[in-house]
Amino acid sequence: MAPPRHRRPGFSRRAQYSLFVTYVLAIAGAVVAGVLLLISIADPTGFAALRAGAAELTAPVARGFHAIRRSIAGVGENTSAYLDAASQNAALKRQVAANRTKLIEADALRAENAQLKMLLNLQKEAGDQLVAIGNLVSSTASSSRRIAILSVGSSDGVAIGYPVRAAHGLVGRVIETSPNTAKVLLLSDAENVIPVIRVPDGLPALANGLGDGTIMIRPVDLGVNNFKRGQIVVTSGSGGLYPPNIPFASIVRKTSDGALARPIASPASSEHVMVLKPYQEAAKQVLDTALEALPKGENEE
Image (cartoon, rainbow, N blue to C red):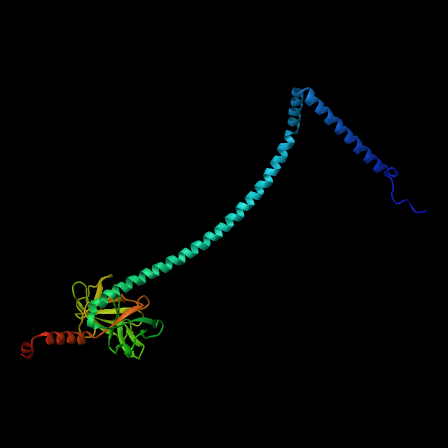
């Protein structure tokens, strides 16, 4: 015979006990609540004291739960602060890197602007002697020849033998041209021999490149060899090719027959340069212009 579908709890002792305990607790809770209600009505002062005593008994437990809750909240806050600090640190690093890049770019622009301003002043001073302004697009660094490529050529009036100078000093001379480019023989090339003078006493000397980025300065009077580190030599104008007083090189050290020097204008740092007419040709043009300005009677004499 199949058992009935709905069994009463009385068939299980455990269920009976559980139901009994539940009833007892419910009745006890109701009785306690009724007693407390009667006390609060009949004796409010006594009820207040009873409530204070209950609060004192439960205070340690409440404090414990509060400490646990605060610790859990503190862990969350510390974790959040750590994550925020890491995020802010990464953002600050990115900002510092970006600012460093901007500072480098600003320094490069300031240097280029200063160079262009110097070149503009030199352009005004050069007047009719100026042929063209261009850029050094490349230069040799490892071969035995020291040659740079200029971004202007014969279509701009550039010709073989024309001097090339940067804002800080002489660079070299043109040795080959094409319509849009030209080759410049740098000062440090072994085949470049240039007459120079020492500043400020005007000691004449000859400078020739050594092919390794340096220049040998030899005085014309071999008995005079009193060069010192840091002294400056400039072009003398002798020979008629290079204009006088263009900054040329700085003395590095004295040698047995002269001094070792380095060019003041480095192709690596002289992006913008000027091509000039040969000094002798420019001087001849100035003289011809002056003669043309004289009255015809004086010019004929």
